[in-house]
Length: 88
Image (cartoon, rainbow, N blue to C red; front, side, top):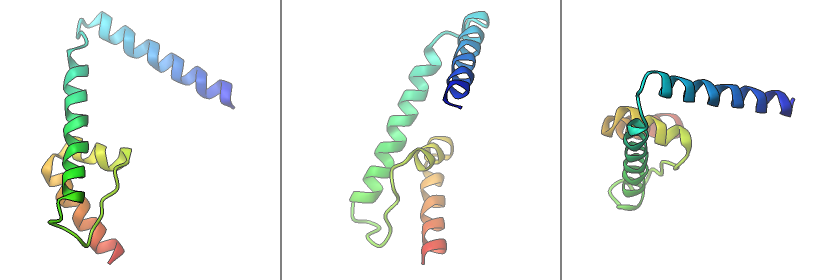
């Protein structure tokens, strides 16, 4: 099972590299992705520890950071609303 997973990951990596080289996209997208990742994590960190919303803690995990990366500040509001409505 572990060998199959490693094989799938290796094939995926090779295909992504092939697309990047073939389409001449370059690695500039990696800078944009990294910047969005850092800003999303920083935004969640500031919301959690600023004291503005003391009753809700939004954990820093790949799901929450990914949500904020894609949606931006409305993603923080979405996570806040989900946390309040689901957890009480």
